[in-house]
Amino acid sequence: MNSTALTEAHEHPPIHSETLGSRGPTVVLLHGWGRSLEAMRPLGELLAEECRVVLLDLPGFGRSPLPAPASNEGGGWGTFDYSERIKEFLDQSGIKECVLLGHSFGGRLSVQLASRYPEMVRGVILVGSHGLKRERPLKDEIRVRYIRALTKVAKAIDGMTGTRIFAHHLAPRFGSRDYNAAGDLRKTLVKTVNEDLTPEASRITAPTLLLWGANDTETPLDLAHSFNRLIKGSQLHIFPNKGHEPFADVGCHLLATYITEFLTSRGLSAR
Image (cartoon, rainbow, N blue to C red):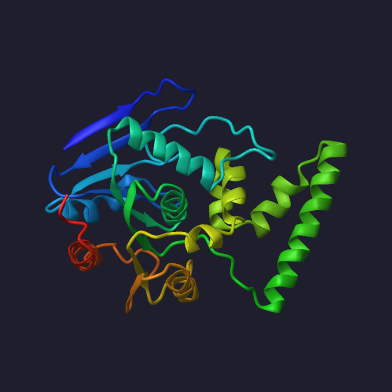
């Protein structure tokens, strides 16, 4: 096992990564929001028996420092910024071709990378991935609009009076668990969850495997079926009694079996 922390010549802080295995195709594992490479390690160790596996902490998570300040309007990195940073990391690591395995937030980044760099991404594996807009029931849509209106008013009052109505009252009450825990990455979270990667997903040409837990409440099955329709030739496997992290505990053995079969059947295990 090799542990690396690359220091780039640009303004970007280093990305912490670990490499497991030394033969077969290179499979890059991208973890979900609020997690680190440790969440993917058990699955990575199993895949490393047949593949060269690269685990990394996305910027701002695990042992990777916060990303460089964004210059875009509103601040915060979007999936484009993250995907470009990962591409830079792969280039500097000498990785010219790879299979991307992205869970949840990592799936968003995998979609971006695969759509923009088809010559590098030879295969895509999405596990409980975010990235597509979902139609909300009417009552949920009304609630969202109500919260947005309250937020706009609260922030306007805070700006004029110096109060902290939004931070002290609205965010704790209406903000999601991820939002309230995001800290310095809050703008990034807001930016990424509001992105619709439908055009990017429809442009993916690499062989794609979709792995979903039947009981996933964070990325429900309608997202899996939408990705399946958008990505031509993609394969979808749904695991009964599994939730948003179907690779947790003994589930990693099950997923590793499906992933290994996918790599072999699509001719991706030869390199």
